[in-house]
View 1 (cartoon, one colour):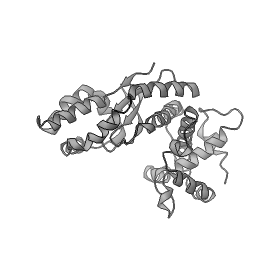
View 2: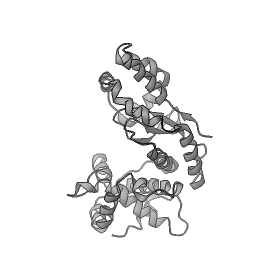
View 3: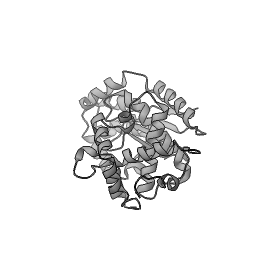
View 4: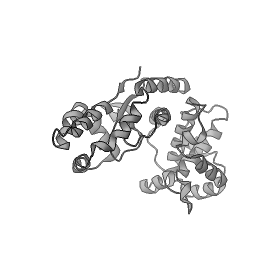
Length: 271
């Protein structure tokens, strides 16, 4: 059974205390949010961000309570814990993990909307709510990160090609857990963006095949998530290509979510 940690509730307590003018922001943050959840929040800060604590303190001290009124309204729309339970049930039906990863619903800074991290020796999924504008993407973020947890046993991706495959599996996993949602939703893109990437897919493959062995983390991140080529609308092109590759691969015989990246990469349409 999945263990859900809705620690965003403590962040809201901090915001309410801040709005009431009850003291220094960092002191209030520590009292209401950081200390009650130090193990998870320290793991998030160290593993996902790797920034000095002074950066954390500075960001907290610049918080204005009114900045989070919209987030409070969005969170109030639905029960997040129920959404997590339903999503994890769907994920287990696609490819079950034993045990389930823990799920932390938190409010952070600078972090991805969804990520995996390790808390006290257990792999967990983090959902960062700080940029949340709608609840509808939370299930897809969870399914995406569940797939990353599922492939952890294969070891961390070493180069662009392996990252491409891992992202592709995560998008395909989300699509199978929620088959009623659009391709654009699973890719976390707009419909127009997906249409553009489809139009230039062959050109993009020619660009990417030259870079598959790259282990430069900054370059890999740019290729996966940044603008591709001159058209800045084509951001996240690597995620799109990874999904197209994995989607085709999964239609072949004896294909599953634990397939090694090297085997998937053999099916790249352009050598």
